[in-house]
Length: 170
Length: 350
Image 1 (cartoon, helix red, strand yellow):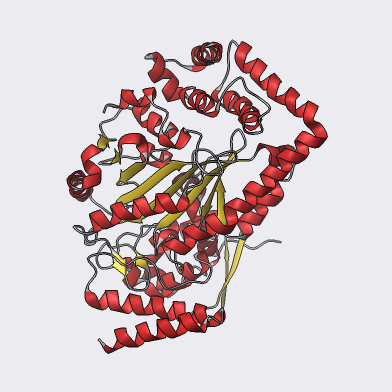
Image 2 (image 1 turned 30 degrees about the horizontal axis):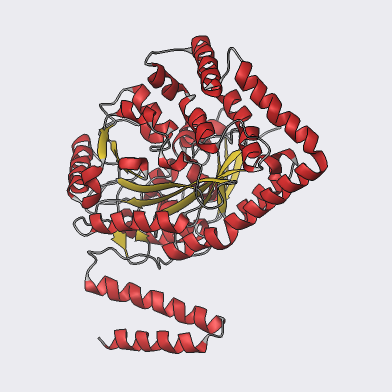
């Protein structure tokens, strides 16, 4: 005796998932329907991914395991029209604004892809406004302070702390 | 400079010089950037794509770097020219096979190649031979600053430089070092080394970058993390620990091979040379696989029939697009294998 797909009510259900949000619920789907629902990737998607973005293997792996059908999937960027579900399917975002629209979801993903990091500490664009420049310089200096303290380089730590207070007072 | 002229030069990254050149073939650093106020290319209309291309190409042409550089419009270029650029590592396969308005600006000496409308609007790539991560990064960074003085790049206080794929955000940097590891392959230690590299969050790719298999014992090692560290820190990690460690393993393996299996090693080198010097038909893959032990032989001072620049030239010019450009005729399958064998013989005799 095997389970029949809850969606098409025809094929044998081979994909079994438990949704925990918004409430606990079990899903039993056939491969075809699971693909349609974006729960598993269809073969052509696989080929597409293989071809276009092997860098994103890690990302895809992560996305694959994310619970499907959650509310967040339907969040849409008002600038480019992409939904989070579409991003999950293709692995590429639609516009820079997506990083604001999907910030919460992307932070979790970025954290995983970048060894736990969620904050940029590198170069700041030449044309960035002074507030951005100041904010990111402070982020970088605070990080340097932590590093210096960790290495017990108190002389450097003191210098960095002075730089921080100087910048904060501006 | 026309595309045909490229076949008369070997390209900076194949000069066979530079620090640690016995193991490190070349260094590449790329920075990914996107224009603020425009969608990424997945969502850009044809007209937006064309506009992005125009803005970037005009700005590049106007900056000091652009004055001696050549812009290749890849939408116009024919398939053979695009393949030629892939073989020279100036563009990715993805860029060659893409569609719509896109191109690449290449500096004199091929030390810089800026891809326009690849996965991101702009990818600034610096290239050099040997192990020169910090030098190449500084050069790419300088061009980024030159362009960034006039262009607004998409940037976010948390995520840094914004890219179409979230795996590239932050610095947008990818450092790739091409390593030649024949001895580790022969002693079957390569898997262990590559596994260790993967554990260090490094990606391992083949000769032509993403989605390609390692051929002829050449491996590209690159960072996967681009956020949470500064560009300088990422570059330094390659210089201080990652690359020197692998180079050391390869050198130790070479020394051990010479000591314990010297005769077999020489036999392998000379058989490879014999095949290259006598074959009447040969594929690109076989050519690269046979040039690999010769390169090791040259670097170990055991083989003196060739030097690295000449070997590199054969390596480059026997690839399908180069071969057809050099011979100035379109060749397929068997005819190409025969022409390649003739070409190699003529180069080895001279």
